[in-house]
Image (cartoon, rainbow, N blue to C red; front, side, top):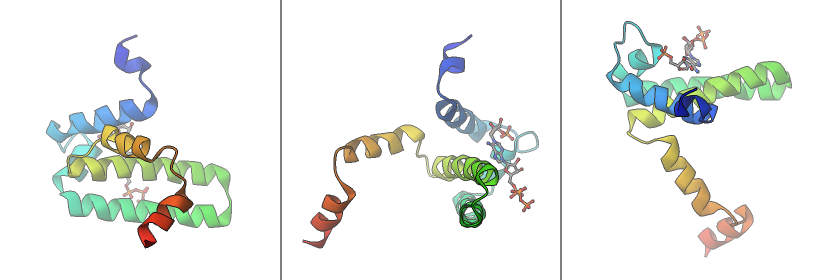
Length: 110
Ligand SMILES: N=c1c2ncn([C@@H]3O[C@H](COP(=O)(O)OP(=O)(O)OP(=O)(O)O)[C@@H](O)[C@H]3O)c2ncn1[C@@H]1O[C@H](COP(=O)(O)O)[C@@H](O)[C@H]1O
């Protein structure tokens, strides 16, 4: 087992998406999507998000799980199209750790 096999699924997916920046669009869906540009990647993310919203509203947990996986994948592709990685988002999430959403909202209103 290589170190990357032991990485968390999200880290592996993030690394795969990064590697697809230089892959052949004929052999990779990710490479094809990235080749269409950041706007198309964003549009695709929006479509997948709407599909997840529909399943969340319906309450079918299995279908929501599947749609949520699509959302996460397309979020990472959209970020990659703008040269952002999962690590960048983790840094931002860590920065927010310990800060209540309510406290943050109150600060913004001051
Ligand atoms: N997680 C995903 C993943 N989730 C969704 N998709 C693709 O995203 C596409 C979504 O396109 P569409 O909206 O056209 O398809 P749809 O959602 O069925 O919708 P409609 O056809 O109904 O409109 C499909 O082709 C899915 O296969 C994904 N493609 C790739 N990955 C991951 O990325 C890796 C690299 O994939 P390649 O770049 O293709 O090698 C894979 O090994 C996976 O780990």
